[in-house]
Image 1 (cartoon, rainbow, N blue to C red):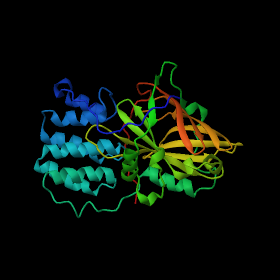
Image 2 (cartoon, rainbow, N blue to C red; image 1 turned 135 degrees about the vertical axis):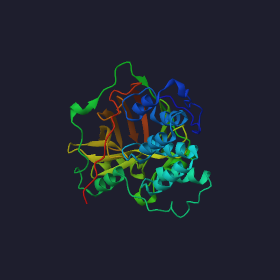
Image 3 (cartoon, helix red, strand yellow; image 1 turned 180 degrees about the horizontal axis):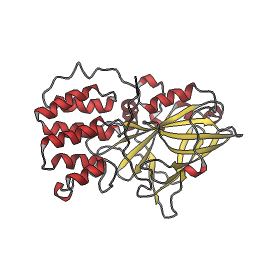
Amino acid sequence: MQRTEPTHIGQDADILTPDPKEFSVEELRKILAGESDRLPKVVAVSVLRRKDYPEKEKIADLERVLQNEQESPRLRHAAAVELGRLASPNAVANLRSALKISNEFVRRGVAQSLQLLGEDVKTTVAKPITPVTGEALLVLHLRSAPGVGVPFPEPKDFLAPARAALAVKFQKANPEEATRAAHEAVGAELGLHLIPESALAVRCLDRTLLYLPTQDAVRPDGPQRLLGKNGVAGVVVVRFTHEVEVWSVKYFVLTQPSGRDKELQILLVTAGGVVAFAGTAEVGGERAHFTLRTVVHPGAVAARIEGLCQDGVILFTQIRSEARRTQRLVAQVRRRESR
């Protein structure tokens, strides 16, 4: 594999700014509901705010996205930003009520919007963080007996990219940016000892992902140690280029013994608790070859990731991915639990 020098990963200019006249309100609502993919959802939120239609309906549309716990934190954060840009009394009232949202990243977007409008929110933002589903799953995984963790997908649940799939670029991450990402994305309460110096950067379509390995993953005897217990090999974090400027967790990289000799199972679980990628690693001494593939889930993009762990160094050797989603994003309604 050709060696490339690390580059600084900062804000870049690939931000879509389509003309609101090209989209109707109903079409933008369909995009946000996952019924159309003409635009990324985070861009659709911005376009919707700039559409000329009754403010009461506009606030309701943005509020629906902001309060939807099934949506990604970065989309909900963007909805908070757009509500703040309306700068009306009703928009401010909706932002104030959103300060009760449990997700810290989303709540931070709400607070920042209010502060830009001159509101005092210092006492409200200090609300304790409620762990999201992915974090709760991580804790349960580590407390489970070896091999008794997240169910591994069936063979029929995997997606394979076509032969003409695109080669995805990857390289060693900039250490300073990786250190910042580790600090912003993962709270100390999870107890994950991430090693930014060993981080890898992957450029995927319109975004940059960073893989931040844990200390267990980069120990020279890491693969052998992980064969005997449920573990965490790191996190994959993301920072999008539209509005959001803070790194957040996209996947937790969980490992567990497969029950077969010298084989380790690897699962990439989203912050919402969905297994998005899975695969195995063949371990021999202090060396391990791993292959990961996409698991069927809403919004899935067929991809295959191959890599090597040797002498405490983790490398990707090949990543191939389709250019478009093969599984449609669907809107999910979260049922309220009876109390």
